[in-house]
Image (cartoon, rainbow, N blue to C red):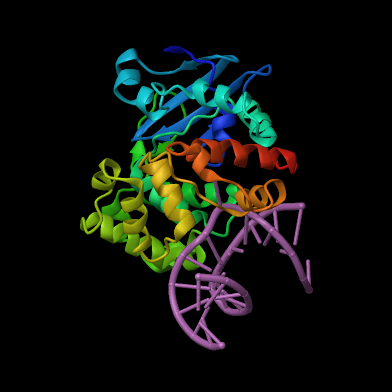
Length: 277
DNA sequence: TCCCAGGTGGGTC
DNA sequence: GACCCACATGGG
């Protein structure tokens, strides 16, 4: 499947800190190619040109899964153009710099556990930890070729993990958080599908009741796992933007309903400005 | 050795 | 509410 879209850059998406299971694949020449595991499937993506991406799937699978996963029915160009023509200089530059970013519709449970793990860790370390739990607890996927891939574990399996095993996977003090969060999902005390249909506000309130989920992680889960795009997670990078660029005067309400997308451009651009990666 | 990382929970006041 | 600090772990 070949997708033409001016706002679809797989490298930018992979480096935007929203997902942790996109793998840069070694290629000849300067070809940009990624592998990805989501919803129990493996997909390869190649950036053919600035606005064309090749996907290694049938049209049926694309329409059934990946079109939605990459949020390809949403017009990101409208957002970028609005910011690029706006008064805000930082957002003007940030939106143009990260104009290929999209907000993925990740599996809610995977996003939940991933962002519980993310607290007080850097991105490479988060990726290592998540890969570890997938290899230890996830189903092995059969993929043609020589690669071996693992699905993200189910709430049932992860709720049965032992603390010692999780510590061995370098998850540190988050062991309890992971087990108890998996259990509330498995026992349906928390219904993520229900929250996805509901509002952003009620989602954050429900998520914050879970041990190990605070304001920031709840916003990440709402934004990346439940696709409430008004979610606005404030981590150390966004905090820097709010302080250094806006002197704590940033008005999020200017972007009501899609602040999460704006936040993503801010995050990605600030890391670039500070020389990360 | 100290500092930082897509923070949170549990104390104080 | 606002401010402390401990919490595992790896990397610079």
